[in-house]
Length: 129
Image 1 (tube, one colour):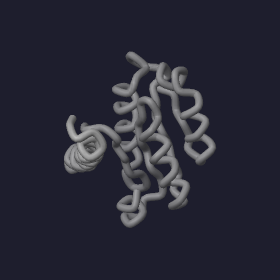
Image 2 (image 1 turned 180 degrees about the vertical axis):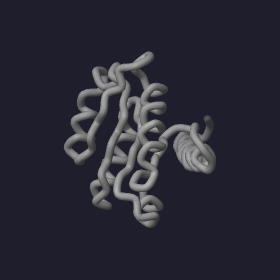
Image 3 (image 1 turned 120 degrees about the horizontal axis):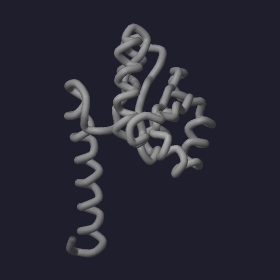
Image 4 (image 1 turned 30 degrees about the vertical axis):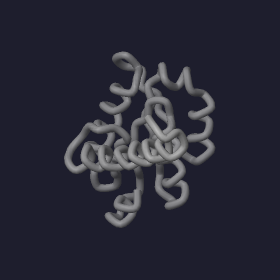
């Protein structure tokens, strides 16, 4: 989102499955004053009403995807379609390891940090994995 703001983008489009990525994106958009559109599968919306409420409270527009399996893969497709039709104003903030370079590498590297920290914490607490 910081990159988007630096590039002069005014809106962020993202996808989410269970909602954690959507809440994170909605939070940073709220802090930076960016418009936020989150695509979420209709099936996932029905399963995660509290998370949808959090995103909405943070100012995000949560759009239900009712095509295909109505899950995260369809939300990814919808968010990419939205992004490519509004490139001048919009930045795509993916939360999964798909999409154009450098996004898969960025997501992989950041998720690796989480795994490494978790592993170290478990070893410190338990002395083994």
